[in-house]
Length: 282
Image (cartoon, rainbow, N blue to C red; front, side):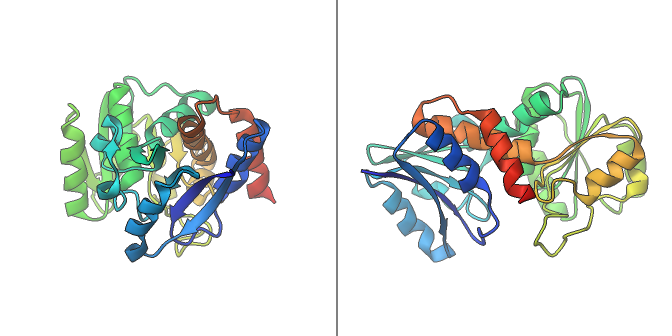
């Protein structure tokens, strides 16, 4: 019987996850197929029941369903519970467990590909969504010195602040139109874009979440957007003399962690990175 893994989401046509995940599966000669499962909101519950069938190893979950799927799972691991979002589901004998590998993927990419140690660093996170939550929790765990959340919606900023402060760190906040934003950015060591601004095929393609003039020389700018490989933010940062890291390694590292949860095998990360890079270029 051919086993199945699905990527669950909406508007998945441009996803490269099936390409590098299938490459990892094929390297081990596994009889598994990784495919897309586009869902409307009313279809999510039925899809969760479908995942319980023996042929399914599990699924990845992307926007907008990382929180939607949670009530339909049998258990959720501690980290995913804290973050409040699930991006990986594992089926074991009809029981579904939710995990969050975004946090691990975010950190592994930063450390392995960016050669950046976040400990004792002043950090800014742009955005208040699920990726911002994952990044915030893992950076607190890695003992950053300070953290500032920058967003547009005051209620969303407040909600993320309260969640992250439950992890044991005082969180500073700002909006994009704050008069002191330039001073805040000037004092940071690590600036992370956790918004989708600049993503190819989106309404904000070619835009940046931060004005170029605000980016100081010598900081580390990490943009979780992976397509295009060099976003407007990264281009501005590079021209300002900042060090940069795009989102493709995070995508691959979180996918590698998911692969290991489904298969109990070590993910071929280098192969996955290579294939993912070719997929974007081609």
